[in-house]
Image (cartoon, rainbow, N blue to C red; front, side):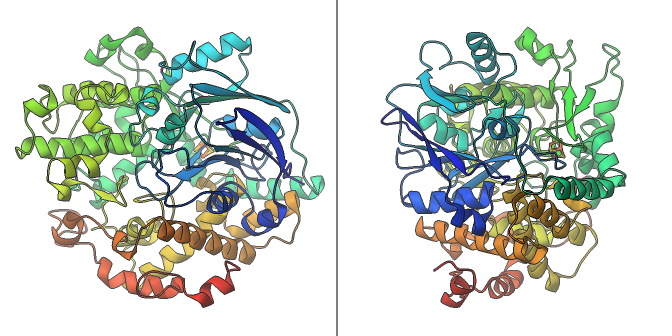
Length: 609
Ligand code: SF4
């Protein structure tokens, strides 16, 4: 129960959609979403296959709590081999789409092969079929695709996940956008979808999600909500969203600025939470007009913004003057301090285009930042940029670049390579702030040493959502304790990601709260200990996939800048990332050898042999 025990298998070569029983032995070991989808991926694809080849497998997966009343129980993941990284990718999204897939009666959609012509997948409860996308949505943005699909099917309540033109043009950090502004954002999962000629998955579900013990489940959900709902953490996220983190990283000195050449931005106050809520002189309105919540979420950290209609970027089209998904911390960092831009309206516009065309704003901003360093150091010039003046701080460059990258046109095609490939192309690989080819999120690892280790060891490349070293880093915890904190939190996060809920309640909950809800929903004696062990199993399964794909311990590293250039300001002034002091302890805790390979003993302990 809680699981439907049913997956939808889509063969894009044959053009078939088939219902299949879910492997419940695997569900016992990997639960759902991230864990179970990773197991299917590892079993079904050759890790050595090119991410953009038909041999890649693309999986949309929910967890057993997705679609239930569990707080934040609306998450789904996209698991595949990442187009940006060549490593296993697990991109997590909220909104309403994941809940709708569960209401339609499916736990997962497993997509193989490549369609000869562009198609979309239409799911209406038990019925699923591939339809021609060529005649009306291929070549359209995410926003226009959503409108066209709803009109064609005469159903304004269907939920849609799509790629934009970035995915169609194989931008390496293209994402999958659902519900217009929520995204499975990282690692280029949208490029994989584009390479398969799959434009959208439109879902309508009218069924419920049954749980094993309805009374027990209600009690567990109520107990978890009783902790979460009155908490200051929930209230803070509801009030200001995640962008309030910008004030913290600015004060601490971990806010990546101008391609991590600095970690404090002199104009941070112009692009943070206060600026978002300030009344504009121009039109008397505010950038932020509302908050919003994903399916079954009692936090509601999402932002709804309205661009200043007098801003120069608003001339790009009437559509940009409408209310739309606003800046979160990660998009704000990447589209403002990272590119040195102090204009919150320009950053808001760039964020809108990322949603509209299906691009990860973190990777786009960090790639543009690398391009700006290439430009300012003379490694590229107007000749390569088609006349774009890529100076740090240029709002005009940000606005023009995001439009070009979204369409893959002109220098936008270069920007679509991602920072690693771009910097290698122009012979400056050290300018790329990446791990395993994936651009940094909004934390500098020199003042946050735990985050440095988390970035270096993340299976999907640099990531702020696969470990939880925040409290210890901001609290000034000693270097010796970092490996244990990263190791344990990576396992816990993998377990939570597999349940189908968001990570944000975990500042208030612990694994006992999650296990109680999972156990009442599914049965099987789930406990905090079993969840943690499962998380460790998932982490090692992902690691094995990456090793088989050709990654090695050499990929558990950080850019030269982070390892050798001392911070100029902030609490970490004078420091570099001490990865060499943390990594051996981390490998030991993981039960890996000196080359970062899980030992036989570790694999046996986790039932991975
Ligand atoms: S906390 Fe925010 S991201 Fe998480 S489910 Fe709620 S609204 Fe969505």
